[in-house]
Amino acid sequence: MMTSDQKINLTMLCDFYELTMANGYFQSNQQNRITYFDVFFRNIPDGGGFAIAAGLEQVVKYIQELHFGEEDIAFLRSKKLFSEEFLDSLKDFRFTGDIWAVPEGTPIFPREPIMTVRARAIEAQLVETFLLLELNHQSLIATKANRVVRAAQGRTVLEFGSRRAQGGDGAVLGARAAYIGGCAGTACTISDQLYGVPAGGTMAHSWVQMFDSEYEAFKTYCQVYPNNATLLVDTYNTLKSGVPNAIRAFNEVLKPLGIKKCGIRLDSGDMTYLTKQARKMLDEAGWEECKISVSNSLDEYIIRDLMTQGAEIDLFGVGERLITARSEPVFGGVYKLTAVETEQGEIIPKIKISENVGKITNPHFKKLYRFFGNDTGKAIADYLCVYDETVDDSKNMEIFDPDATWKRKTVYDFTAKEMLVPIFKNGELVYKLPTLEEIKNYCAEQVDTLWDEVKRFDNPHTFYVDLSQKLWDIKYDLLRRNNR
Image (cartoon, helix red, strand yellow):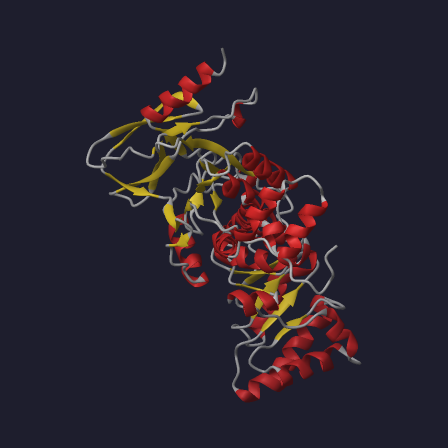
């Protein structure tokens, strides 16, 4: 067994069947056969119109570090399932294949590949769990964060969920994903240290309780942090003591220093009523620039209601319902074989068939295009085609909704952009990882290319993801052949 002081090798973070299949491939002399796998998802969380891709950077680092140590091989040997030839081959195991993916921050849609892996069967099979783990988790949180941020209508949103996250990685990488999705920062310090997600915070109720009076607690905090004084005003009574004592502390400590930047925070109560009253009290006292922030089990729907009701809120701290995506905590991305390659280099499409129509896969090694209207800059549709096809965006095209083939749409005056970009080539990284700030800005820009109808929370417009005629014919030929 592994001792607590041993460094965890994430290569072993895999489903055991990936190892038994790898050994089986080795024993049947198929370990070097080139395979193609797609990562895609079937349903958008919360019934939304789109999701946000995230987690690619962690996948890149994992792929670069893939290896089996002596202790890993010894552990596998102890299972008495694997051949010595297979175990011996693991000593020099590395990823030598190709990977394409959509950049982090890209709006994505069901049943289209967000990552494609081309590699030896033994390599492609082994990476399945970790790829899904990272892409599923971070895409889920980035998607939820984007919904929350859009509900806030330009107000600042901070991620406050570390203590309710599903474990350490859930907190740290969840904060990273939330930042990609649009949050302005986090309460999680280590996410700032590791990834540059701006961390911040002020006080808990315990600070107020530690002092003999609420006023003394506020005054002391203003003295210690005069340039960052946000006071938690709901420990006792928000309107009768909290806000008045905050105003008194601001007047006695900040005003003589000429400091106008300050804030109050509420963590309980009727947020609409309390923030309206607090805003009135602060303005009457001359603290018009004082910001009001709120927290306490918020999500996009509660925030939307608060905004509709005219709540006076400048900043939202969103915790458990964001970091756990509580309303729908599973993204549902899958990893499916779509093609294999012969020794002569011919690519043979593969399909998975199910009585559940939603689980039927799109076969073959594919390209993914997104069409943007030249007149609006808005995304019109996504287009899946076979790897050897190209799109001529100088001509009009007719596209179909694959879920309802009677729905047709003519696309004209558009620009076609390939969405899957090369990440690894022959095991070497060929993609320059963007900074987190660049990813966040890219995400905001790409979400802005979507029509408002696609961004609705309730009954959003279904974004077209069409198959080329060639791909459609290949898919349905495989369906017919496998259904005889």
